Length: 253
Length: 253
DNA sequence: CGACCTTTTGAAACGATTCAATACTGGTGG
DNA sequence: CCACCAGTATTGAATCGTTTCAAAAGGTCG
Image 1: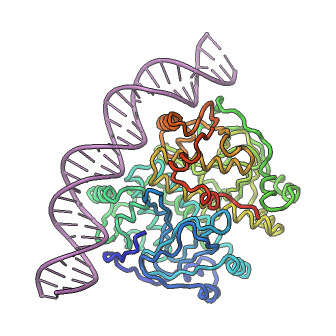
Image 2: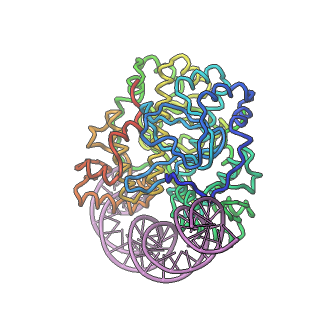
Image 3: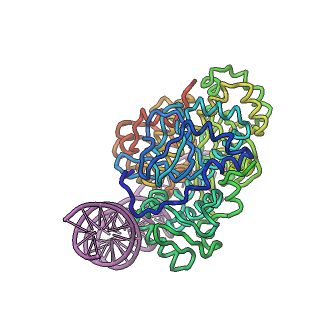
């Protein structure tokens, strides 16, 4: 939640972007949805706090480029990253009252996001039924992802949590062509990973070092990930890769 | 995930039911949705495993009476309750591929649930726009609930997690008239609460005892909860009650 | 009654956190 | 250009919270 510029974080490539990914998933042309989203688009710098937890914001957020995260914090100041948002991800900000935001959203890198008011959003879905189907799948995937993480937060060791996070991010980045599957860059610090996995940044460091010593991954330099032994990593994450992908990744129509 | 009959769990009242709750939220008459759901309804006994994780099940589940939970387990056998489902709750089973269930669902008490195929479900929503709005809110509330739990799973102490769980359940049961707000019954064992909060059942026991010693709650007898000091409990849960309710509870239209 | 599950409590062990010190990185200003 | 600075990474040592193991008591069902 620090708004400070992270001078250690390397920018990530801005294209191919979220719009193209949505178009690919929905078998629509990018131009079909571009105009509508463009009206509500906004560029922002790394570190910008886009939405506060508890804000009145009955909007749907679409990430067009860059990385963001949704986070919540306890009154004692600890905070937890609920989910990362990469290009193509969609987040409904409002909670059960249809108005109050259920989490804060912050840009990790420079990013472009569309914050679409709920009524405009439902108009848009009505005029593009394919888009609506894809959005349903994206929400279903997001829900399944959340379940996987809850499982590991509740019952997994530090190794399991981190191995799972590396696998989840690998799958998600592969979908938006920011990962070859085994090699990718995360524009994150170890502190981000700690806030995501519910661990202290110190223990994230130790755990990553241990995975490196066992030659399972190679993580260096803010943060380039190279998965050396996917089988072993999936074993530590206690994940079945095929099943996982079907559950947590939105499939094209 | 044990299918064994829990002979210690007292039944809970079956009415007012989930159907009425949905009707109340949506300003529809119960009869408007009853017929459509009735076609897919099914009674089941406590302990029944309704859905397996990874099943092919592109269905939406509506809880009409009784309690269920959604759970996932790690390969080492540990399992985590992702969410409880009380009457009126709705769960989309399919994950991102629109087919594979993202969690198992088990009945805690005897229960009635409707398992509606996705196409029938979307027909139903189309013919009842009010219902669609309410369903959106129910999903938004469920997502916000999940975020609150992730926060506490990641960064909260055992006391915080359990205090939060007691408050969350109190709010949810109040909505379906199974709680006066401060006094309610949970058809659960301490093991369930442990699986829900990511704690061992032994530590659930210790933590509940400690809360009792401080005269914050009274928990006894499988499991009757009486909140004695709501302010203190909310403090331990690190929750703002008003904000919490707006975020995690579906509001009527 | 016996069988089984749940709750309770104590003691030991373990995993993660915290504290602390040092080194590394990239950006800033003299 | 170099010195400095703030944020980040790394490692060790001590501490703390939770788990695990174990044993006993209570409840419920057949």
